[in-house]
Length: 94
Image (cartoon, one colour):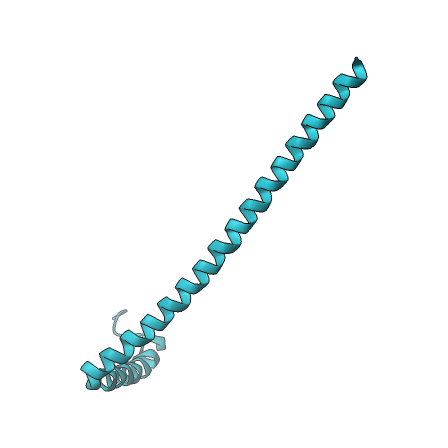
């Protein structure tokens, strides 16, 4: 009877292992599908972002030029201020 109990226990354990393996395989398959969906959604998001930028440029064509001019002015200002900031200030100590 001990052999029969061991056989039943072995079969139950083997069945449990098979069930866990199947659950793991199913979870991996779901994860792969989710990763594919995320990749598709990210690509769609990138496409929509580019389309929005294109449409904004059509609506306000001067916006890019104004932004570029502002960025150039900010860089020029930064270039002028950085040397002044790096010099020791005598006026603050006086």
